[in-house]
Image 1 (spheres, rainbow, N blue to C red):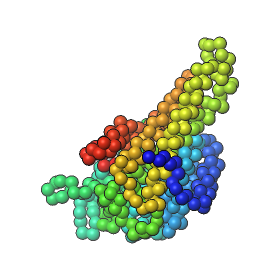
Image 2: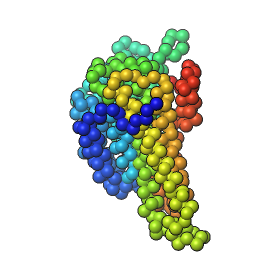
Image 3: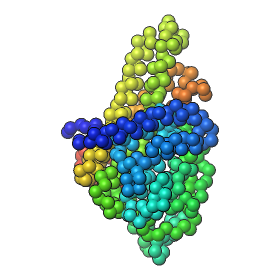
Length: 404
């Protein structure tokens, strides 16, 4: 098996665009860092951050070119969200979710895409996959009701996509779907009270008897098989495997948080003593040097796994070949290991930096809290990912999750 960290055949133009977008994100890091405490205090990404990302074109990454987007690739998305997280984990997470929801929306049919972007190509979308609503089939569409918690980005979006079950007359599940609903038809319950990623504003969105036309419904089961509604089959980005694309929201913010933690500890170490020892500086301690090397290697490992997964996704997009089960399971495993390694690196770095890591004035404590919460996303469970990958390696047909 060959291991690739970049999809073959990446054009110089695509590489230059990626570099440009990452540089744009890097230039915003000081602003995001300066606003990080206010973002936490207000429990939402401050508007100045949102406007800065908009002005920099960083909400256009996954949007089709047909609507003025950049239509880049998953590696680019990862690198951009990584940079943003060096300044603010919450801002990175919310932008990652809104960008991936643009990718989801581009898998719908043309009429639904026009509904979202036709009049305003800058519209943003928040979303929740869990089919926690209800849907009644009516003439021309569905009557949808429900509550969907953890809707990251809902405070900054004009549309929402939410999961619904489709139940037959016998009460049995017929399909699991997604529907697109304008935020003007939705209310938001203020429910996001957490200890990390406090500023993502991942509140609960609520719909009560909202009519959704049939063209704004898609089958998740078909999407999981690569059967997308979009008629624009020549747009490579929107041929990526569905579950893998969904999982790609996870690593970027964690990579940036881990890199920020490593940079902070490296910067402070030469002028920080090792309490209750003979070492006046941490850099004089062999145990510190050993541990900082391990932490840096974990950060590297997180990047390597994430970038291999992105290369697999982007290669599938370019070739139009839907990956087999073993490859998709490996992508999920890579994504989840990336998140795990990033979290473990941050834990090591907090310990190395000492008790001062937890002072409220120390940025490291926010990084630690953001990582601990963000890494607990339901699809980021490392044991579940390993079970899925193990079954795929042994050609065991029964899968414990459809998200693969």
